[in-house]
Each structure stands twice: as structure tokens, then as C-alpha cells.
Image 1 (spheres, protein in one colour):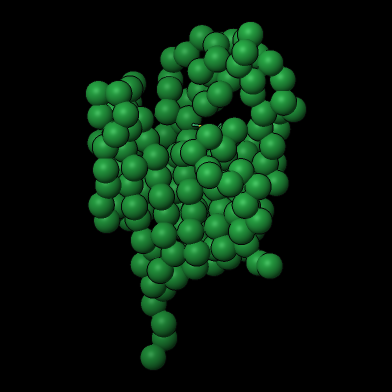
Image 2: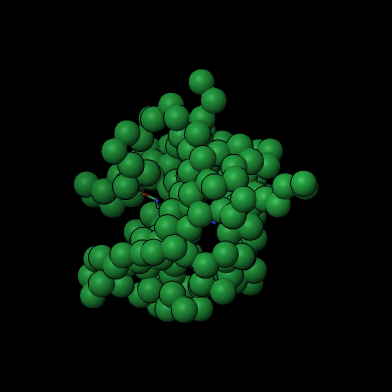
Length: 162
Ligand SMILES: C[S@@+](CC[C@H](N)C(=O)[O-])C[C@H]1O[C@@H](n2cnc3c(N)ncnc32)[C@H](O)[C@@H]1O
């Protein structure tokens, strides 16, 4: 079966109901075997494909749905649970996210949908939205202090020659 969905930064797949869904291409730049990081706290990152969301190894127009939940913290203890679980924004992270958005839209089919998650604990969403080539259609806030945004985008149809 050809997979219809891609998660470009799946981490430990916490928000997935079926972490082995065969319809989903799970990607992350890290793979970590299951281990106890703190007493009683386990981490496992097991993507189908280890890759960088700034250069996805998939052809244009492959997927119907893309999921993009990149790291959202600039500051977190180097060896902290948070940094281990979610990753940290380093260097020219805005350019990294810009390329990530572009790659998500590239691998989406015409009319494909992108679900983007951003927690604005340290960086407000208004700094992130200009990094996407297209604006979101709608969104919803949740979590502590309503700081987590779930946004829905749709890729415009490519112009067809008459
Ligand atoms: C916020 S976590 C994702 C959490 C995930 N959605 C979940 O439900 O558990 C962000 C993930 O992005 C990954 N990541 C960071 N930079 C990346 C990049 N350039 N390419 C691919 N994955 C990246 C990190 O390794 C981390 O696992």
C-alpha cells in the first residue's frame, strides 16, 4: 500500500493513536532505542525513515496529508527531559523551519493538507507564520495557557496549462 500520510518530525509519536499505522511515513532526524531516561520515564524514537525535514527524500506530490510538529523551544537544559523528548531550536532555526514548511508542501499532492503544531511558550506564533509559503486556513488553541496552536493549511492547486 502506498502511504498517504507523512509525519516529518514524529519524535516519540505521542499524539498518534496508532504508532505503527502502515498508512503513515514516520520521519525524524533521530532514532533512539527505547531506554529509561529518568526513573519511570522512557524514550523511544523509531521513525520509518531517518531524515531531515529540510530535505525530505521523497518525490514531489507523494502525500495527501503532512504533519509538522517541529521543536519549539530555544532554551532547554541540554540534558533535560524536555530537550530529549522535543529537541531544541538551534542556529538559524527560522531558516530551518522555512525549509521545513517548503518541503512539507513540496511532498504534498495538489489540495494536500498540512497540520502544523506550535507551542508558543518561548516563540510567538506570529514569528512563525511568515515562514510558511501559504497562510493557514484555520486553527485551534489548547494546552497550558492556551499556548499550543494546531493549524490547518491546504496546498494550492498547481497552475495547469490550458
Ligand atoms: C516536538 S518533537 C515531535 C513530537 C511528536 N509530534 C510526538 O507526538 O511525540 C520534534 C521532533 O523534531 C525532530 N527534529 C528536529 N529537527 C529536525 C529536522 N531538521 N528534521 C527532522 N526531524 C527534526 C526532533 O528530533 C524531535 O523528535
